[in-house]
Length: 498
Image (cartoon, rainbow, N blue to C red; front, side, top):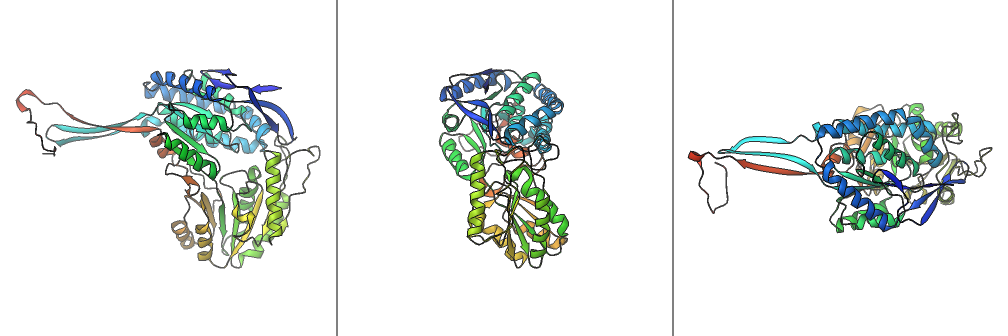
């Protein structure tokens, strides 16, 4: 059985690791590989390697950094099919969905190719007699990323291209559930000409995470995952003086008004709820049917959910694959059962789905629960599976109040033909990313990604301009070049401009 090793200093290594974890093929329900689980010594080795590399990379020219990013971007294009199939084999998502996350991650690399513009400082001439002021930004040092299983290439690429292009070195701790593509990314960076030690991969579990959070040689940590762990990461890392990006969970609502095109809305709710088996932090998990839209919308959702083709990710006919582990399947089906027991109506129940030839796979079919209320477990908890809960609201005011009462504020959407309703919604709803007739409003790379409330712990969104600011710090210089006949007098009073 293949053992997936760490990547430190430009080469794979076992390091001090003695523990391993299984890596499954979710469609078969079988172990295909194993991955090393790092000890604190492995993290320390990666930090020391990255710190040594920072001594030269942090002083490298913008031209050198962007040349690497351009070459890296071309390699991502060239190896896209290989990466997509590798992601599908370990995550379970269909190959075309994996291609989609590669493309969206590559957009951040493209943004990093133009990092010189984002790093431009400012200059103020003659702020006082013979005095000028200017500023510029410099890298932090060694940065780390702790990333989830659901987007094994896209979410890390929200982090490391920006960190590296701004002059930092980087240590990635990917999910141990689908780790292989991270090592392939490391190989592509090496082929693109990135110096050894600038990008490193340390696989592991909580021991590796804690070693990253505690290590004094790491300046910044970026995290995406569940809200409880995001709070843990933020608290533990800030206690040791690190900068922290900590993105948490979600419970994304899509509001459908009576004036919406119900076929259009249902098409997009179906795709947003069941794509990647619902294992997206921006998945729509709650449909809010307003007024008379309710029964008609549920009828269309039923038809479309039943038409979704479920199968292994490498089958071109599959539209949705399995969930990532047997434990995920058990948790999802348990929440469906709880919802029904608490009064939800099962319009489509995917718990009994079996895929011929893959009877041991971790499959859960598309599920639609109607008349879900906020006190039900299926509403309160982040299901992270192919389950769409439909709740009812009498008015758009009630729908907005429902969303604002939810502890999460990651993404939301409204389907309507009314510009007035859309504008009111986007101004009043307390959510960080909003779609108008767009169900998954993930910003482009030149904007930043981040929710509100329990979906973002702290105040640092990810990638785009906010990412550049996160991975750099500003220096402001006040300068004077006096000539012999115009030397100003010094004074013990506080200096002012003149």
